[in-house]
Image (cartoon, rainbow, N blue to C red):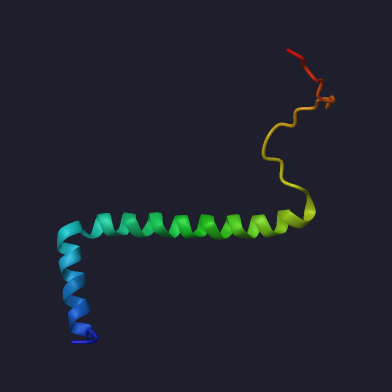
Length: 73
């Protein structure tokens, strides 16, 4: 009951191929591989770029800070 043998996995693979078809499985595999590759590239770029230059994520608004004035009502 604990582990599944190779025959169980082959039967599961055949059932999945019958349900989804080989073309759709190939597309899913290609999409998953592209996502993993993109993630790895992003991680590699993130570690290399972190020590070189700071990453700019938004706009900086320059302003002046003034002391709060007391209002008497």
